[in-house]
Length: 241
Ligand code: F6R
Image 1 (spheres, rainbow, N blue to C red):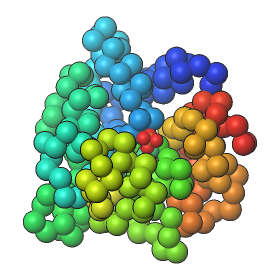
Image 2: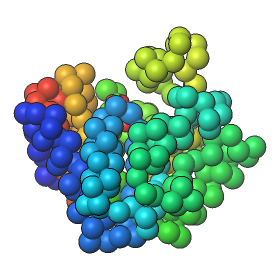
Image 3: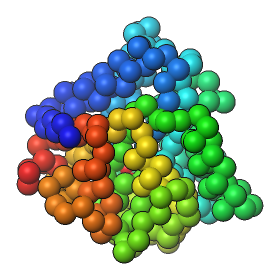
């Protein structure tokens, strides 16, 4: 595991963008595993700038997102489908047909989860998986529990996750209570994982994930078992290491 702690947002963003861009430059049909949330936004913006300058093309890239809320439509302003379009897909030359986000409005969610895993199995492995980390140690929406699921599944979001996500909704009541998420085994199949964390609110989760015991109570701690993880932190997120 390679851990980098950055003094400036600029260095954090440019390093993350460079890691993805250099993969895509050398492997134009790379498969990216993408996350939503605040952590990757600056990196996505930088990738869009690099794409506009002609430094990198996503025309042959495929993307698989980690998760999507259940209970809101894909065109809801807070759906992860909308997030990805607004923060990345609409600003790069990726073919939208090659972008994949679990369909949380499918009639049969179980079948949708199976189909998502099958697509990952047939088209994968993911070359670079981008991950954020919840302040409770979740990755994707794999919440701390006695038991974690390997494959894509429907999950009840924890109260603290609902509270953390309430900032994007008019009220806590409007935050979807469930999500579809890739499971920990699907995440761990990626060839390389880039874990992103910024801010003091992530410091304890980062310490538990990187230096604590490997436990389902901190799903991000499973990353200690992955052979190729790069961790990009700001000084606050890395302050307890
Ligand atoms: C988002 C996701 C979540 C977030 C995590 C951190 O697709 O899977 O695990 O990465 O909640 O969110 P931010 O980056 O907003 O702190």
